[in-house]
Length: 319
Length: 319
Image (tube, rainbow over all chains, first blue to last red):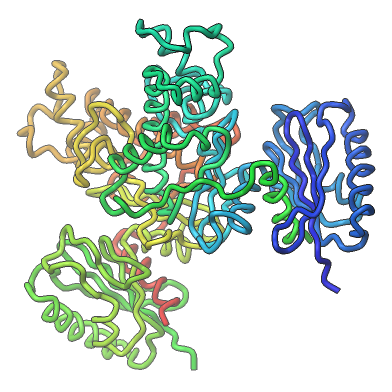
């Protein structure tokens, strides 16, 4: 009998969220554990097993799980490992797919969090029926998941889709977490927006609500709140951010000619503050072939469910 | 009985070259006609039919042609048409696949010239056995053909792979033939190299062999000859060109994580003059994930045969 459920696990730097999902994308049940609690990966896997097994039993899903999909930072689809460790407490490489499948006796497929988001959007969200699209996640960093002809692009080594690290400023670009300079992520992530705020506040002299906040603690949320309240400098920060993102999406279009971009993450909820300069910059910078023809959409997945849904969709292809 | 041959047709601005090719990639016979001779597309197709039929008959290939593949500038794989006309004497759109298949009674598939080159390289050349690579054609313009997981990337609308029009200089960039500024093609094509020569000769005061040539008639070949003879300014022009191309390939790697780039066209034959700064710039600019891991190769197809071979490979999938 075909097994009716999949499990999605989203491993974040703070929380690990997991849920049981049916074929229609309904999250039957979900729960979470703290990612950082265990200094040994084996202990973390033990707790994940205990809590997830409890959830599976409580929902009458024993022997009904087709596969487990996991989204985690830097997780490699081909190798099944987390190869580079940035935010997790265990030394890389972490053979995550093997550890989890050995423990549960269920097939496991893993990929990075942005790819999981793209798969979730394709299976259950704004990209249903769209075969060529690029998912852009605007969070602490800028991630991307590229889908071409209905297939996730993993590349030769499983690491394709690092669009947050395309160079947008060749000279005097900001230092990026990757060690290089000028990356898209250094400008268009939530942290990039906060950096822009600090730069603008230092360079410019006009009054701004943002000057009431201690400069090093300004967040993208503070900038959003100020812009919504009509603060000119805050609105200019979104203008600056949207313009650079539009330039980037125009170049990405020359690569794979997507039908749509789908934006996800905190910054994507800034509405027209971000979308208006983004669309204007995109249309100004894209080749004439594509002017007026590429959709820039927002994710349709509920944020609370999105990470688990995206990972779970990968569970259907686990074997 | 399976038909043992395909026909490849390469439509260039000056010449239309065509040939009969067997399954091992041997060009059995080839010939050409002048592209610009006929002001009406029907007359051009008539002459192509006459000359190609003669070739087919002379080589005992009647009823043995599986399909016809055509490479032409701006030819669209999906629509079968040349949608935008830059160098051809007939008004666009030109329903090329239909015109040729109606005339010959043989299935026809078309694509743009850079994609045809990529397919040729994958089938018969340097990309045999490589499933993820990007073909970069360095000719009058800069073209590209992207292969991911063994499949040509056409994108949503058939126009994917316009990497010559990714922006490399956001401010004060050179005007490009596409109407935008700062495109890769404006720097790293043969015409881009000639433009760099004119810029360098105007800005700099040192002696150079290139000063013996009337400045507006300098070609990339002149720059190559001067550089080979040891001319410092000419060598700097290649350094400048290779550096920008390396920056571009580093960004393209973040997109699709290819195993290799394959360079084709006149400039690609500049040897270490171009390759040394290109590799250095690539390694300096690429994300650490890929340092030392991506091959930058030269086409292995004989230039005289390459265009026909590439187009012909597409003939196998015509139906």
